[in-house]
Image 1 (tube, rainbow, N blue to C red):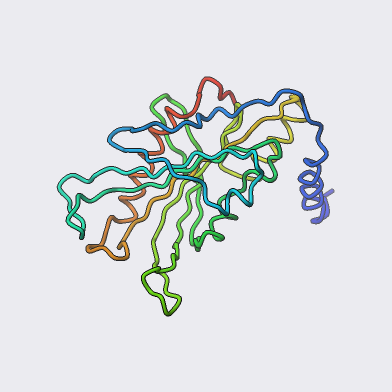
Image 2: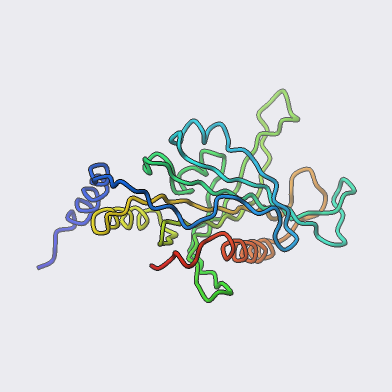
Amino acid sequence: MKAPPWILPLFLGGALSAIYFLPKVGAVAQSAVEMKLPQEMDGWVFEGQPASEAEIKTLAPDTQFSKGLCYRERPGEINSYGNPAQDNIQLSIVLSGADINNSIHRPERCMPAQGHNITGTSSSVLKLSNGRELETKRLVSVLGKKDLRVQDRETYLKYNCLTYYFFVGHDRLSNDHLKRTLLDMQDRLLRGMDQRWAYVTVTMSYGKIPGEDGEGISQEEADAKLVKFLTEFSEGQINWKQITH
């Protein structure tokens, strides 16, 4: 007999709410991600950045952040200021605290609060040189930033952006927030594992950059650069011996 259509939403709602009543275990299983960022990688320079005031105020106080502006010169190209043109990637790792519900959120929730209008969402599987596969989520968005040069009216600059993200637990990876939540519940109930999760995001702009000459790089070029960067970064930043699921 076919189940009534209200059964699944009721089950999911009950399962998700149950996470607040799950027992805590003594030891915490640490995420397989390395929070300390490298100084450089394949010509990319990592410049540490602080977490935003909004992130610090919104997330639990024991949440940890590793953020960086990563840049690499494009040989032979000069920007409108007469300096070597650069590729720039915003990198962020957010590690949950004891209360995971107030530590990490899916980027589709927090990015709009930062000014992003998300126009496309898809999944992408990256092939790593160590033989592993990394499932990621790919977002296309338009970021609106207030033009601080204009004092008498609200004027916004628009940036076309690509973002990739995924979650890293103790021995599991996921590119889906709901799946990650259910995995966490399962591990607490069946394995007695209270683990810390982190989510990794990388973002790159493409197309014309406001205030600069030229048309910038295409979306396809940005995609290729982001995938190559994230592939190499993930190979070295995740303890793959610890990932068993």
